[in-house]
Length: 504
Ligand code: NAD
Image (cartoon, rainbow, N blue to C red; front, side, top):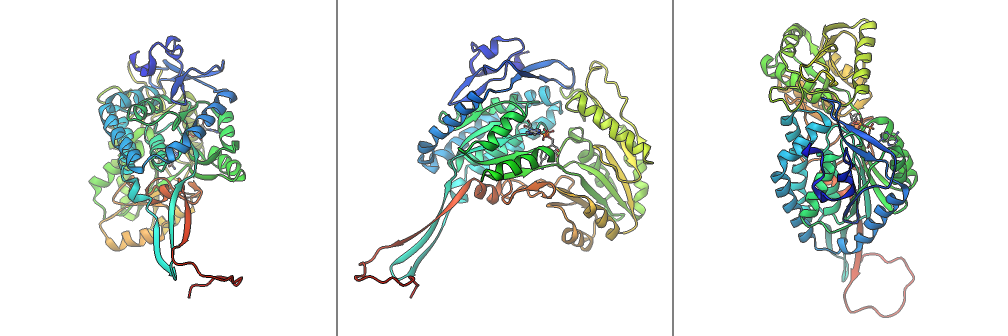
């Protein structure tokens, strides 16, 4: 299909292949990898092979790093206003191509077109935010710290930085990374998810069209080997990672041992607490959207609901409403939720549901055997709701608590700390929840409290490793280092004193 071709250079060898090969981007050129090993990118609604991702060779990886290193000196010396203007142009181009980007995401990732638009839009907001980078990275100045001496600090780029992406937000997460990094004056190596790399290529094409110079943004594809090469390469100063705990903690350990900065956003198990005084209608709708939107494949999805006291009886209404959700291919206009990413993911989810049932949980709604007409081969799972003890699985688990304290304890027992929400009309309850809950992103009558880019994405506990979070002020700090300058401009003193200088 037209959607699976890369517009970059239609005559290029990667486009002549069937299926097309996803190109690398090295030093401003979209190039076909010489590697003979590839991974199929599969449309999860149809099993059609959309394209093939190369396992980039070590030589090609080194060439990408060399290109980024070579581009750095002139890019860091490019005025910040010029760098901001490229972002201003990029946001315009992303808006222009929003539909194409969303279509590609639905083809490769499976989420509904409407949800795919949200994926792009949430990333676009980071590009918009990067347009104000000059203000965000302003330094500090104290005049006359001693007689004729001033001290000031400036934020400077690090050099070559890298980003490693997960499958679930093919546009938003690359856009969490490279716009902030490059507008701060760094050059970048992006490693998209091997499951859905198309959006990254389209975004890079737009960045080049917006005027990003050659070598400032590079893309290499692959899996574990290329990730390890990124961790080990001494020319790379910082790594942004988003994905699972297994990969994230491996990358954090390996790259930190090499002296790199790492920000690692990882897995989650987010809880929503429902108080009996909450607005029932709004709360149930919020739970459906946050539990089953994107087929539960959001790191801020609500996967467990804790009903406090009398709200427990709402479970039946939740099940009834979940039955009404339409499972279909993401391209179909009536789809509420699309397929999960792969056959393996579907098998894993079904296995977890079964182990919950075997462990005594009650299956209130079973979406495992769903068949979607016209898409019989798709990796579909309908909304599934379990009640009883907590089990680990990407389905909505409903639990009961006698009091708010019990509910808070249930949430805080879990090792993750990405997000947690409460639904209530009581300010006192909300305030207690906000204070005592051990999650980095708290929602009060808000099911998916992902902060906009002037704040940061602040997962905590096992959901994050590192010191400086993604985007917002922390994101700018992550991609810059402080230089503190002490200057003396006065008629210089005569004579020598070897005593420690003090400010008098
Ligand atoms: P994943 O960890 O399997 O893959 C992420 C990236 O790491 C990919 O680019 C992959 O090639 C690479 N990778 C995977 N295993 C590796 C290994 N052993 N060694 C080196 N590299 C490896 O994650 P995924 O399945 O693509 O994404 C889903 C996960 O991401 C979920 O756990 C979800 O909660 C999490 N996530 C978290 C956030 C957040 O902000 N906290 C956001 C989105 C997704």
